[in-house]
Length: 240
Image (cartoon, rainbow, N blue to C red):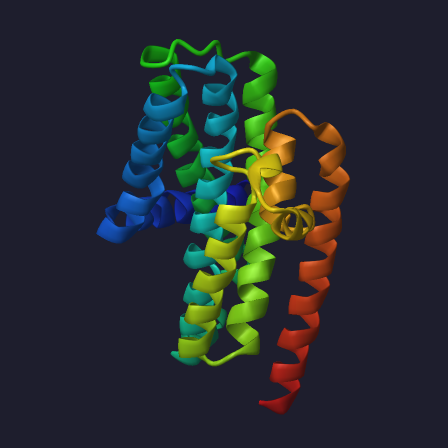
């Protein structure tokens, strides 16, 4: 058991460093969320102090979705197409240890990004970050990474690589602009508002803002996307 944990944490450490060293991943995981938070917080936060807190939750939810959607599904698809998964299976290591370390590395990167945003919120916008908020952010990160990882895997494995990347981008940006991460949902037109209320990112944003009943929606999405990915992966494995 101890050897297994050492293997998982070593892989997590290596994958975290590899992820952060990629310039695009570092920019969109750390710099871009911070820029968005400072920009929107400076524009509207001066009039509405509560907006700065809700914006913080929205930007965190956006970062979770972005890192999970673009940093898990497409990479696993590339690994499979290039027979990297087959190579990992032949190593003297349980392949599940690698996937666990890979998943934890994305979670660690997100927690570091959340810490950076929280420090910015405290120092620049004078927001009081309570212990309850920190716990909610951590729980939301775990649920969000799992949910969007299964979504990303389902779309990536269901479609061709080129189509999958485009579809992932389309789904992400639709959710981003309709989720209430930056602006309240009630400002949207009625039709778009009704669409917004059924989006996974909206549910994560609501949960991050303290509406804890949305945890059931998040768990429902995890079960749904997890089952979809399981069926797609099994079907493709049988064909191969």
